[in-house]
Amino acid sequence: MQNYSCIIVEDEPLAAEVLKDYVQQIPFLQLQGICSDAIYAMEMMQRTPIDLIFLDIHLPKLKGVDLLKSLKHPPQVIITSAYQEYALQGYELNVVDYLLKPIEFSRFLMAVNKLKQQDHRQAPLDGAVPSSNRTYFFFNVSKKKVKVYLDEILYIESLKEYIRITTKSKTILTKFQLGQMEEMLAKNNFLRVHRSFIVARDKIDAFTATDVEINGKPIPIGRSYKELVITLLESR
Image (cartoon, rainbow, N blue to C red):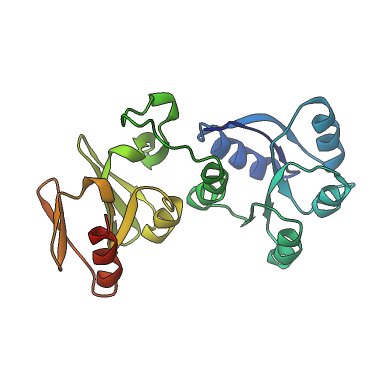
């Protein structure tokens, strides 16, 4: 997986600190610095190769959008702003994503996951995946950040504002929305089978018209998901 050298361009110290904390939890992001204005950011980009900018719109001296327009070969950009009205202009400048403040970590993950998907690599033919190439995320669990490898997940269950992630070795409960998790896991080995369940396709041991079985546990197939789920499973 490619590593991304990045900078945060943000004049609000608290917002910059939140982004710094988020970036440091993502293994493929390498933070090179925090810039309080666009001019400083331009100087840093002249000194250091930068792959990604977390860019605020309202900056002193030079606005974030004007900075983007001034760059002949801009790096990839994720805009971070409290103002929704600039979203269309941002996407016209081909940004990766547009995050509205205050930014939740789950939404931040969705944005950077778009970068990860662009550099998705196939596992070796023998099925062995080196640990350095295994995709994982950290989740908040009782004031700790707990690492979960995607290839160890059996299924994920929605519990209103929380989700329960079950692997062969552990179960964790974290505050997250199942829909957000589904977007994060797009193009990976996961399938939404019910409004309350996402399952790992390669961990399915058996299935019927009404449920799938993983590690001895039956998981219901929702009525609105049934046709797609059965079609996908029978086509394998």
